[in-house]
Amino acid sequence: MQRTAVVLEAARGAITVQRGEAGVPGPGEAAVQLEACGVCHSDLFVAGLEKLPRTPLTLGHEGIGRVTAVGDGVSQVRP
Image (cartoon, rainbow, N blue to C red):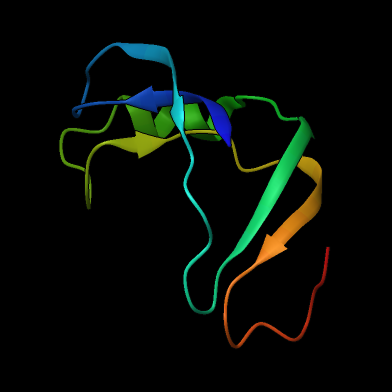
């Protein structure tokens, strides 16, 4: 499964669009095919922080999509 993501590689770094393989969902995870997602002011605020909890960081938390696959133990959503 291919993915396109808006990624912040480092604190106060450049925001880039990256494409690659998404992989399959692991235990407790679900794969969601996003149909729309924005990068909002909150994402830009995070991008300007001096320290981040981890990197790289995929931005965009206001997505709309469909569950396409689930990993073991997932029972609250289904494709």
